[in-house]
Image (cartoon, rainbow, N blue to C red):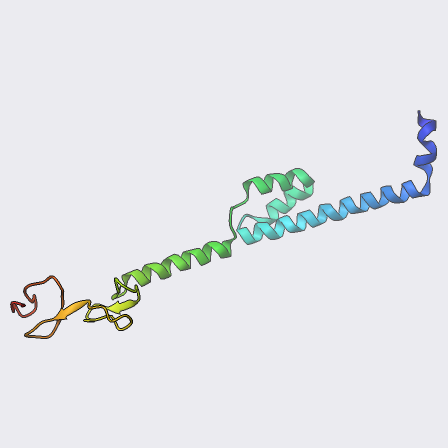
Length: 145
């Protein structure tokens, strides 16, 4: 059987193709290691460790990294936290929203400046903003009509 494949194995074309495959494998190995280190650093997952694991166990280290890597980048997690904080700050402001158009209005507005919906009524005595269903002004104790 060996003499059957001897001409193919000894041919210069086969040697060139095999050497190119070996070169491709080495380049792929280092590229995979480089990508793993870069991805692990962006995700906050000890890039040096996963790079070393990928150098020692070329494809197996990469597959294990893909299974156990953090699900998101650190920048994305930081951005999400900032968005959550911004939403919390927006919710704790002294602004309300109009029930008709949902635009921000201040608590002492009598009407919405955007859609002109009546939000509150003014006290007949002191003029402060009261909720529409209040019968007495809590500020000056005046009965409303």
